[in-house]
Image (cartoon, rainbow, N blue to C red; front, side, top):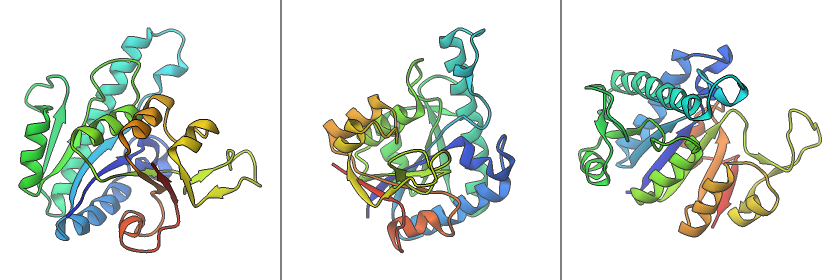
Length: 231
């Protein structure tokens, strides 16, 4: 049995809609995670908020307030995806670093570990609870806290490239590279704060495209075609 933290980008979760929530995409994710749970794996989930909010693009909103809106976007995403997970037979719980009424429970490592022992999928919503920290940082922080074996980084691109493939058609994808190389080459897989935390705490990652058929299951059990980031 292993423990994984699955990071879903908000944009990938939006599917072809590019914004909001796409139920077919969420259901595809749920059915794959169900396979991991049925194999006895423990799974936590962090979801970005980019399908609802990109506050950093506005100069008219204070950064702290913009980040708070983003945190609430991740809570909405987690409530939605949690319900989709439940619809396919999984038990879930959502933890946040701040009170959200009766919608979620306050985060603590002890609480998360208790839920893992009960076979539940644990969603970490609301970021770190502080501005100036991305969901990348939240992902690594929570992975360290729950002693995850690996981070599964499901994006809307199928791995890590030496340049942006949307801009450079000759961009080359890496099969394997170290987190040190990610930092040195400024590849932007995750932000610098998160990258340093991964490096110091030796948390490996698998980066892959969410849209690929059985992408999450194949990342662990099948033919992995993404990028392995070693420590």
